[in-house]
Image 1 (cartoon, helix red, strand yellow):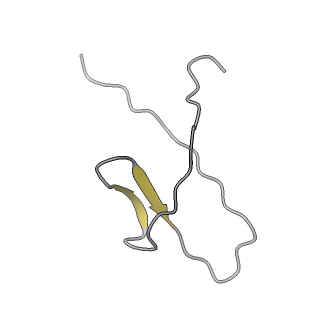
Image 2 (cartoon, rainbow, N blue to C red):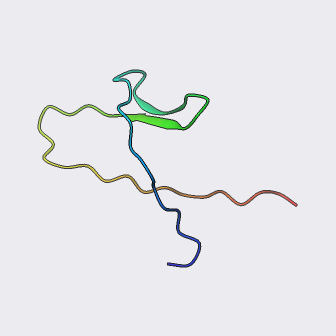
Length: 50
């Protein structure tokens, strides 16, 4: 994949607030499910207005 980002490290996040939240250094993803066996995050890059 051309232009794909490489993740160097994963750090523990916080369980709140739910959803994606910018924490000043990166994005924290907090999810909850009583019955999920897996999850998938699909990052989307927005186009900037020129």
